[in-house]
Image (cartoon, rainbow, N blue to C red):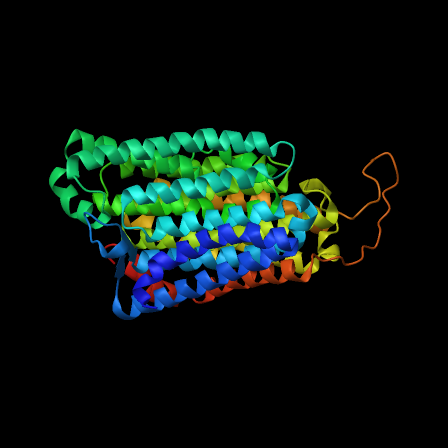
Length: 492
């Protein structure tokens, strides 16, 4: 098979798996997870092979049924797409491996549906990344969105309401994107990204072009939960099952950022990005402040995601190479960090039966390896070297300095302090508060020696691999930027 088929093969593999997972599960219920993992591993291999070809010989394309644009549909494998594909398939594969034991605990009767929906989600996300056509991007966007709604609904008793809220706001976002796309098509006569990028400089002052870009960016903002359009995210992440949150949180919103990056590159970074920068900076502070007020670990992590989406969007909207590198690097770091944090939270819940921050006492003794992975992700979130989060924040700060945007430098630094504050609460209660049999202060608090009771091997191994990747991204950040990110950054 030719390498040129790789852009189409990756989402097609997930779509095919979405059909066969229920069939396999109906014969042997346990077979649904191995088949989903196999599909993710194969797609990861294709993504790595595609990345190798891109960096060896440049961008390559696949034309569906041999028809070239503007008549046919184009799939593109360029450096930015390669970077996102490896991230999505790599994180997705490890989360699917992790999900086996905890899916039995939390969604026993719905495992087959979960893995089929997970395949649809990954098909939509990878399809968005490789398509070179803005309308087909919308099609894949809706495939991933519908799968996300259903995955979130498989959770606690409040999950269906959270999923409905997400569906309502997600539908608004998709409608805004589609209306914006219609305005751009009216002015350019094409939906192909490359052709539109060539035409837009000659028509970018037309009112319908400006309106179209604004609508698309608003739609993307809703999908990625950019503050203040984040209302759906905290409840969705909190109430969904642990495997669903661990899959959606690290990679779901990142592809909406990819959409924003593509549209901004196509449109030549219009003046509206100044407004986006300020919105992102406010989101960085607001998300961090809101995280401080949470007592549920998953809800705290959800609000921290709002702040980190702000970091990424700020880097993109500053539109200089250093900030853009910081944004793309932070996309990778945040995917790894959030995967580790939510996977750890799922393991903690399975063993302690609670995610109340004030009841995590004795966690290091009971789950030492999970705690170690969690701490690595926390250090990266705060920005402590040599973890990856430190270096992406440094790039973002230097990008803001290059743009003489000192307010944005302050926003990043203030948010870092706030990050330390709300994560330190978790460390304080888990490390420094003695475990007690009773929570009643009127009774004598007697310490008890806890026995180690880690999460299962597949869950722990997947979490530790991702935690090690956080450190590896930090240690080898220079090589990652030079060899993988620089080629994806405009003007670098």
